Amino acid sequence: MKISDVLRHKGDEVIVIAPDETVSTLLARLAEHGIGACVVSADGTHVDGIVSERDVVRHLHTSGPTILENSVSTIMTSDVTTGTAHDDVADLAATMTELRVRHVPILDADGRLSAIVSIGDIVKHRLSELQSERDQLRDYITH
View 1 (cartoon, one colour):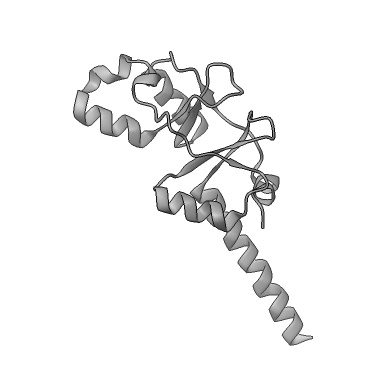
View 2 (spheres, one colour):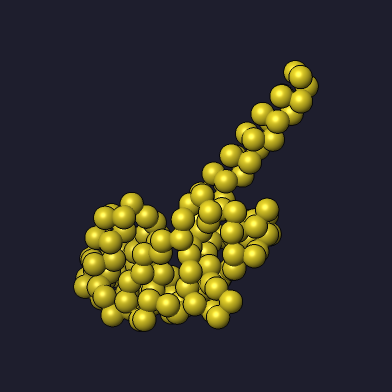
């Protein structure tokens, strides 16, 4: 099973934020779209970083509410784990678990941002796959 299978059901919409936008703007975007992370990109096609709700919480704890007016670039993760549509779902899930990341931007063959997957997307896809296998086995046994 490949990441492209997950994306076929999930879609490829990616919510991005520019590095110079404020953390307050980031929070509004996360809430508006009901998501937990944004890809940080100056041009919308290249990954400059990633920023999540966890990043905001950690910086609020250490820096206080003034962090809300700082730029996203001050709290983003610059060393981003990425994947491709051709990656194996199990391999990417293992990498995400090992590195403790919940969101992975997906790049096309030219290194441009094409989608994003969350650990939740992968789990949802795997559960659907298991349900389908169970149904097939039940049908095979009963017929």
